[in-house]
Image (tube, rainbow, N blue to C red; front, side):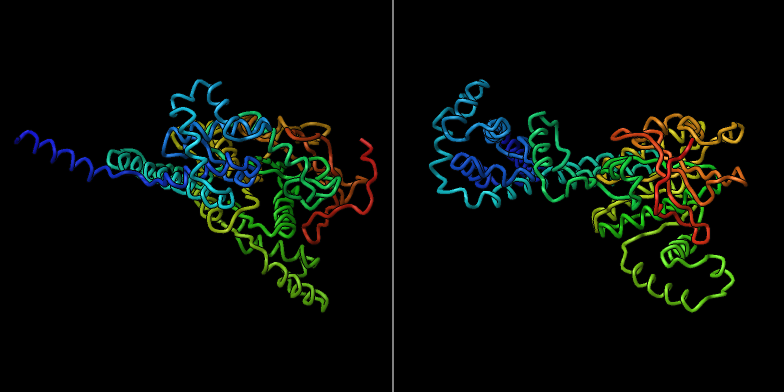
Length: 459
């Protein structure tokens, strides 16, 4: 008797310390019933990216997988086809046979509320993942002995990953990916010839890179004084104006006030030298006032911490993404970022570039990162940069989806016929062509503009 009492106390203790995780079996049953009553409504919930593991009841998860397979292969979904699919997989008896499937359908009148049922299933699954993650964090925190800063970054990454779980959960079958491809091809929201992704604001450059895509790491490199910071700012400004999506700018070299002034004078088309001397024309003041109104409404966020690390950038970007969304991240520039002091500088740069690429994928937005070029460029007769001139690490080239380099001939050749012309050399492009886009360089505004005509380079 005492033994039974002790066992009972132990069982009660286990129940108290490990309560049942959140779930909604009624919604799981109703969701499956809806899909088998009207298989065509599966497309109404495809954006929720529900997977088998989202079901608390493992048998329901198996049935959902069979329905998903039928939908992906464009076969009809009903009681007969679902039973046949499960039988082919050798799972029909495991879930309780045909009677179990029939019971799900008989208890469901229509598919009208399928979206709500699917949302309930996904929400409960998300809660379970949050609880499991919190438990792991708690256990890891109790025994953690390394850097607290690194641990906090790992915790942030764990929870931020949960917000993107619907896009990245588990392995994806090719046929499911192809279904999304077909939807993209059938999308009529873009006009013929219109690029996907974010625009740079420069037509010739957009034609080469085909828009800045989510998940891309884009390297913009140049020797000093070529204008790479200005180009990055105007790309940020142009993309923000075009989409209204927030842009995060991390400047390790210039102050926030300097960057905003550069954007203001460029937008207002006011000579920056007159601004510094305060020798304003009447038209200058009107242009500046108008530009301030425009820029005030743009969600551009600037961080000018000169010692910012990759972990810091990750934290800021995750917070912005979760609160406002995020269109583009700009980092100026790679070689100024602090890394692990216990490894060689080349390895530090390699870790930072890989970290930025992973962050771009995590945030599902492009990251435009500026970089220096080696001095070797200066020693060549033709000083146009090559991808191999990227400074300090070949891993930058490896991690980058696009490598763009700025070249202005007037920097080296005083008597050049190319005064006021900037060449944006696309030396690597995973998703498009390599080549050169020619832009106008307006030194008075430290800005780049589209050329009004497009002469051949002549090189």
